[in-house]
Image (cartoon, rainbow, N blue to C red):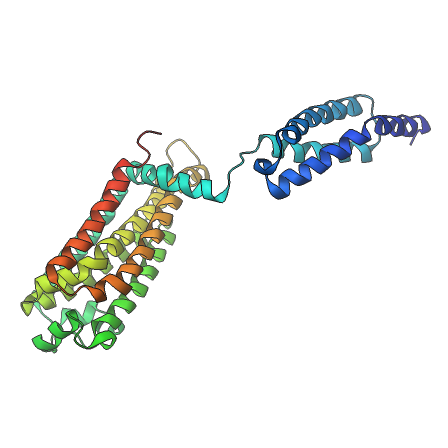
Length: 330
């Protein structure tokens, strides 16, 4: 390399290196602690020194200084740019924005696919109900052995009633509810994750979950325990089953982006649909956590049919209120 360039680079660095070191220290602080923890003077100096560094970089390129100096300034100005201009949002702010604005808006903008998911669940439930009354043996076809736990067409009416009202504690329907929650959580994960495969897996899994619910409900209706089971399911099922449908809607949204990208590439369409789809998945996860708390505490503590229905559907009304009103003024 020409000695003249080296001398010029050394002089250029010597005249400005103090400011670069100060900028580097401010960038380190912004990256580790965040701009919100910096004083006004530090934030002001960060912006001023960043502009000076970009000017130095432009000059260094013009007069063809050595490659090492150019690499250093490019790295420093890139880091400073992110510190000055990148969005500064703490985790608490992100959560608040999601709960107050992003989540409800995603629900409202996806109402068509959410309605489709609820219709799939309802269709499966109705089909399972009528399959059972056509032939009770359909119960064993649709209901997984792990879920039945001794409850089936061969069980006595007294046994089924005892399970609903916890006469046998966690050895009865309480254990069933625990397994059912685990089952529904897996279903929610699958209906979302498999939705990108042309929607079909999400729709079929949601329909099948409805079949399970339909034959189980038909069994109790057949024994005169329909309203009793309705109250038992209401406590946590309103939230839990809605979570599955919302997760299904997220998966279907991804699948539709793959099937009908319109004027975008499939990758671009999938990326665009993913913004709302991920929010739907997060809402479903939140609802499943709430359902777990209801299943673990409220269902066991509340034994009155009317109170069970009021609690379950009352919480469901709160979810609807959040979905309809959240983020309206933003």
